[in-house]
Image (cartoon, rainbow, N blue to C red; front, side):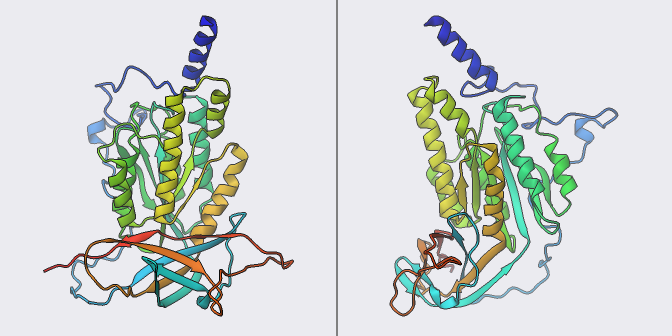
Length: 373
């Protein structure tokens, strides 16, 4: 029995799984994500700083524009209707959409459809907790990250953020994919053994909330959080308010099952990973995104396609809330497809006339404005 225990621990350590490095953060490490220095490159202090805030390069400068206030408010809701294979269902008439705010039907005032470029920030977990050099989980992280980056189109904006103890912007928003590819080269040797998911997500969402157009966070992570300053509940509220859709890709699903089936994973570790999966599902659902937990590398292309379908092809709905109180409270939104003749759920069929199962992806709510004196 002792020999078997010794072998299992050695196997876990070799794959960088469940047994993070025990030395902890090293005091002489200056960066949270390792950045190799090229020969002849200037000293660290002389190198240009990465911007501390995500911005769109072509964002309109409104610093000199006149300020004005209006009493009317419109809530915009981007909705994707997907079939059971993750494909966008087009040509649904405006009259079939029903929006409920706190279970009260609302009058849809704006409606539109179309395909548009995406603005995506890839938030990638890269710490010694699971991304130790040349382990299976390290390889899977890079495979998922590079794979999604290669599916982006010419006009799509992308930024890269990696996190361990803290998030670091590796490349700012740009349509130049070569900048993102260069930034990804820094994902080689992880520095710290912390994985502060909550801090990374909220900081990124705060920076993206005012960007125009179709935007999203693509989270590639285990879902574990070890040392964030924020709690899970506070993170949920911030993400709900910022309303940036999160598309989460959970790592190490097959690896976890492999060790669990052989008795190498204890009940605490099993519970930690189940909690991590549920956190990612919650963040995605409440922000109007989706969550994916692939067991095989062959699932990645279909996941990328589902994200593209949901972001590029959307129904844009808008309504003026019947509840005009400026109380700062969170209001739940529910989008339904109905038959206006009888208010029954809408029946959608495929080319052969067979009923088609579908899902509706939309944000779960918003926070009403507060009264300002």
